[in-house]
Image (tube, rainbow, N blue to C red):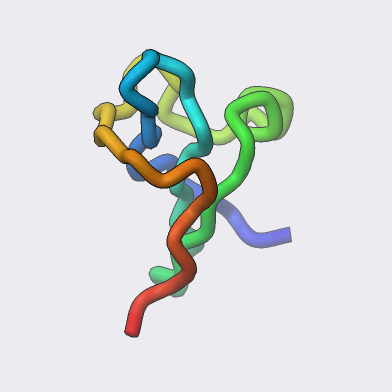
Length: 64
């Protein structure tokens, strides 16, 4: 399994975390559930990640 680093957490207007964006060593990003982020022990801690507001209920797929 690749080593991942947390990038940010995407939060809806009601304050719920919809997902967390993580990045692997090659720079590829993906969104995962906050509970999976915590259970996999990805760093930094969830509470230390910057929040990004979103109005999308589901992750917007990849770059370009």
